Amino acid sequence: MSRTSHPSPLVFVALFVAFAVGVFARPALAAAWHGLWSEDAPEARPNAEFADADMLELARVQQQWGATGDIVMLGDSITAMGQWSEMFPAADILNRGLGGDTVADIAARAPIVLETKAKSIFLMVGVNDLFADATDEEIYRDLDRALEILGRDGATLYLQSPLVCGKGEVCTAERRARMRGWLPEFERIARAHEATYIDLNARMAGPDGLRETLSWDGIHPNGEGLKVWRDILRPHIESATKGAGGIAA
Image 1 (cartoon, rainbow, N blue to C red):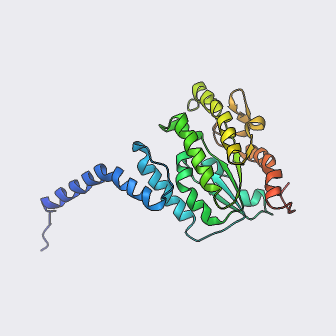
Image 2 (cartoon, rainbow, N blue to C red):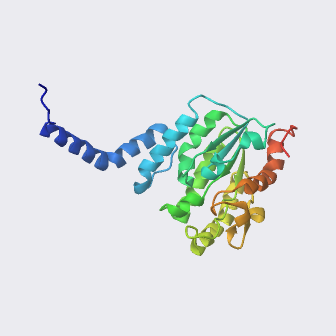
Image 3 (cartoon, one colour):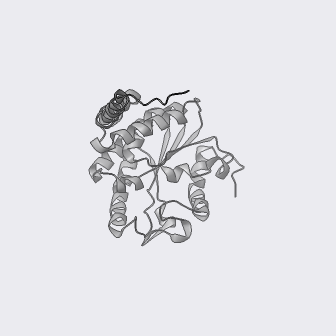
C-alpha cells in the first residue's frame, strides 16, 4: 500500500530564497554579463541592465557559428524582419537585426558585429528608445560610441535615419516630434564618423510619420514598405557589392 509523500517545508523555504536572490541579484548579474561580453559597452542604465544582458546573449547566439559576410544589416526588429538575402541576392549579406534593440544595445554588441568581418555595415536604430529611459543626449552619446566601434576595422558605414513612427496610440504626436528632433543630430554624428547618411523618411514618411500604406502597425514596414526601403538602399548595396548584377527587381 503506497503512501502519499508531502514536500518538506525546507523545499518551500529554498524556493523562496531562490526567488528572492533572483529578484534582488538580477541587476548585479546583468552587470556582470554586460562586462563579460563587451569591454567597449557603454554603462548600462539601472532599469535596462538585464535587457542589455539579454541582447548581448542573443547577439552571441547570432554569431556563434562564426558567420562572415561582406555586408551586415544591423538594427532592431525593423531590420530583423527584412529578407535581405532575397531582396539583394547578389550580395553577401548577413542580417543582424534584434527585436527591441536600442541605440545603447547596438553600442554594447558592436564588438560582436565586428566578428563578421563585414566590409560594409548598414545601421538603422532608434524607435525603441522612445519607450526606454534614455535622454536625447544619452542616445547621441551611444550612437557616437556605436559608430566609433563599428568603424574600427575599416568597414564602410551607412547610417539610415530612424523611421519616424506613424500616427497611432503608441506613437503619439509628442513621440513623433521627438524622433524628428533626433534626425539632424543623427546625420551630424554619421558625418563625424565618415558614414553615409541615408534619409529613409523622405520617401517613407509624411507629416504623420511612417505612411499607412507602407506599414502594418505604424512602426514596421509591410510588404510595400520593404520594396520602397529596398529601392532606397539599392544604389548603396550595389556600391557595397562593387556593382554586382542579379539584384532582384
